[in-house]
Length: 83
Image (cartoon, rainbow, N blue to C red; front, side, top):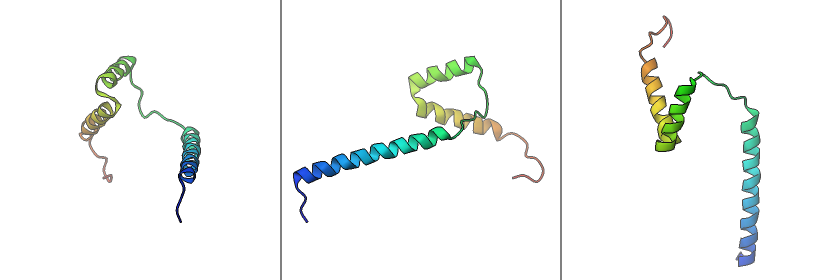
């Protein structure tokens, strides 16, 4: 079956609308979950993180913070019976 240019255009528009609808549903789902902070940063730390994000980007800063936290917490002693 051959699809005309007009049919291709209509299909493309329909797919775009479906994607927009899906994005809306994903947004509703994400908004329905409660955000919870694991730790509270001081105002000075928040400002430093925000400056770093402006310079290096969110992804780079997130990766560095995760690496640092994981390294620092790896030195905590394990409780008996926990892995």
